[in-house]
Amino acid sequence: MSYKEKTIKSEKIYSGRILTLKVNTVEMPNKKYSKREIIEHPGAAVVLPVLPDGRILLVKNYRSAIGRTLLELPAGLIEAGEEPKQTAQRELQEETGYEAGEMLYLFDTFTSAGFTNEKQQFFLAKDLRFISKEIDEEIESIALLTLDELLQKIDHCGVMDAKTVIGALYLERIWTQHFSEETKGGSRNA
Image (cartoon, rainbow, N blue to C red):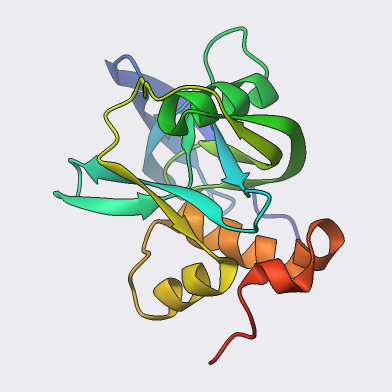
């Protein structure tokens, strides 16, 4: 049996630069009604930037919503008329000063489908070259970690950003397809 809700009414509550908040009235299969608070989002590109020596470029970003700085993969909003791959290349340059010789699409995720349609598209950035000391974003600093160091930080709650956790775990799965095992940072201690 298929479970689908039918939207009966949609009311826009707020429309800002990044998101729109709507309250939808839905009819459920049991013919009861409910409200759904939905955030519409343009989507984002997430970059897994790996230097030739195997270290991964991460950024430290202050996040107002949680009142703290997080260690994250570079990422950003897909602008109107922009292809996600262009967004990935732009965000990598703006946040780190690096450019990728090769930008490979990997996969998509929904950040939290219970209340938002935000889709994140993940890209692997290879053949990185440093092109600019000027960073256009409000980045606290850049961190360089091996994959093993990043996975250990995840294990110990040193990395709590969801896109970064997802990206690191996916990167661990595909590492040997793109890089040598030696550049991973040695064997992972559980």
